[in-house]
Every structure is written in C-alpha cells, then in structure tokens.
Amino acid sequence: MTPHVAFLRAINVGGHTVKMDHLRRLFEDLGLTHVSTFIASGNVLFDPPDEEPAALEARIERHLESALGYAVKTFIRPAAALPGIASTALAAAPHYTAETDALHIGFLNALPTESAWEKLLALQTADDRFYLGERELFWWRHGRVSDSPLSGNVIEKTLGLPTTLRSITTLQKLAAKSV
Image 1 (spheres, one colour):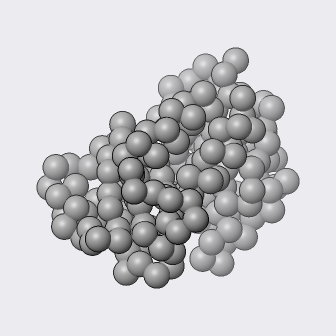
Image 2: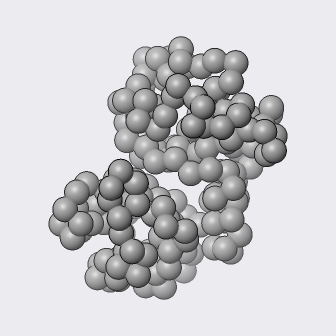
C-alpha cells in the first residue's frame, strides 16, 4: 500500500492548537492505519483505504470539524508524488536560492479559473512570482515571506479556492521521510 499525506489547513495557526498525538488518534478513529505526523503544522501520513481521494478528504474534513470545532480543509496526495511536486516547484522557480529566498507550495483541490489565475498573476512583483502545477501553486519569494504584502489568505481569496502552504524544505523533508 502506498502511503498518502494529508496536508491540513488551520492546524496550529490562528489560535487553533492541536497536539500531534490527538491528531493521529483522530485519523485512526477514521480507520486509517500507519498514521504518523510530521512537524506540528498539519502533515499526516497514513495508509489510505480503498476510497476516492475526494471522498476521503471530505470524510476527514467532517470528522476534524466535528472533533475540533472548526473547519480544517484537507488536501491529500500520494507520498510517492511529493518528490515530483518538489522538483516541479524548483524547476518552476529558476531564480530560487535557498539562502536568500522562500519557495512555498500551495496545495489545491482544483485548478483556479483562468480569470482567478490572471488576478493572482496581477499581484506579482519582482520579488513575488507564482507558477501553477497540476494541483499545486508555487510561490517564489525573493527574501522572507513575512516581508511580502502577500499571504496565504490573500492568495486563497484571489483564487477563490482553499489552499494550504508548505515550504519547499518541509516538502522535501516529508518526501524523504515517506519513502
């Protein structure tokens, strides 16, 4: 069985604190096996049931909202896909330098409309660039993300789609852990 990763939005940010052992138990309550977490930002590895990913995402979201009392958007990817997503992110942002830049991957459940994508591209600056993958958004920032006028919330509102961001470093470490 190929492990999968659930990238969760709204875990341990904005006053929502969830201990990782509690999060693991919530996933196990759903019948998921070999559940583990990676750093405290809502990355959960598990062996998936024989269920369509979209249906599983919805089931996890309902369960987490019921247990935690707030909505937790969920984005599932096969762990085997993570190295390719990381490679695509790096190739899409040819100016990225780990010492001076940030590169974030925004997980999406659907592609933005052409109009929404054009609105996001209109927000680009010399220091903030966006690229689109299969179901991921890549955000290259020259300098620190905290210095950008943009944020995950701005990106999400502009696209009209929920997303959750992970740094390229987190994604690469998660990819290495899950093989």
